[in-house]
Image (cartoon, rainbow, N blue to C red; front, side, top):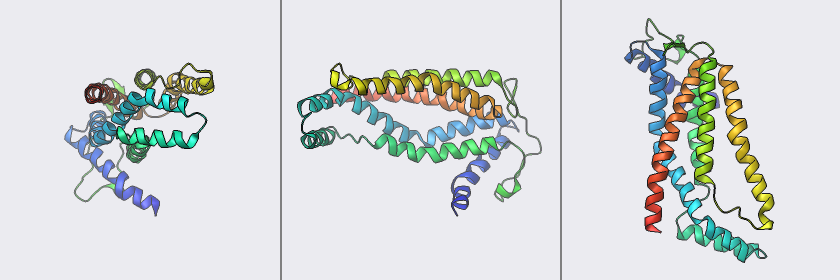
Length: 245
């Protein structure tokens, strides 16, 4: 039943959208993949904006949170109460990012599966009004996106590193401060940030190289658009938040 719902709600609509875009762009699968990625990012933009706004707000109130932790270190109940009051005062929901990520994740996975399936005809997935094109070109900017590409894998790894670095800079706070009681938390945060910055790009690059370049193209465009969206929304909302608080 889950598979049926997955196909009806996500997989088939995205597959048919991809085929329609292939037709629209004269049979060029590469341009269609870029277009699908852009459309999905546009659809998910409201969720992305809410998640980034939540991160900005959390970073802004972090010094106040740290003060509460230090002043009420011996009484966790009062600490929790004061923290909740601070969240309420600044209209911050610390779980917004996780919730919105869960909303976006199925759509991203569905796009991934559609692109991974290649560009051959799959009549069982086509809607009645969609006709598979007679010719599909998998060449894009000199690359055959139906084959592996080391160049694209390296590009994706580099972009993943850039995204992790920029996100780390934007979300690092003074919360894990200089007090000895926070040393363990600081070390843990630093370790996680290092893994995200160095290990994840290597892993993503390796996975990208092991799959058709169409997936690398999708991932590269996805990261580029994400970086642009985060930069614009984070800077814009940071200025608004500073002005209002």
